[in-house]
Length: 97
Image 1 (cartoon, one colour):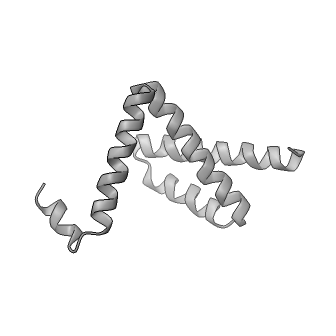
Image 2 (image 1 turned 90 degrees about the horizontal axis):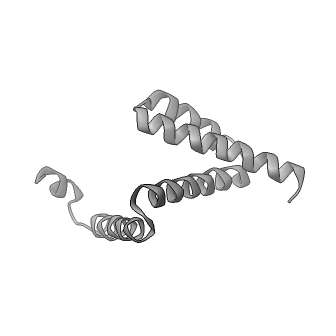
């Protein structure tokens, strides 16, 4: 890995950590700024940001739930999201809750 690639990875981790922190404290304006900044960069930087988000989220989920429960939770989210993305009226699902 080159120095440039290491710097990109470090910047992606920094932005991902900030984004997750802002999500946890409900700072939507700061989350928007981080996303806009990440979106303005090239494809490699955006991919690095998304990869860093996934890495941090996986680490946090595993620490909080343990590996098996984290995997089960992620599977449940994926299955529910798949069902909702194909629903004829996705809003109906949320109106019932």
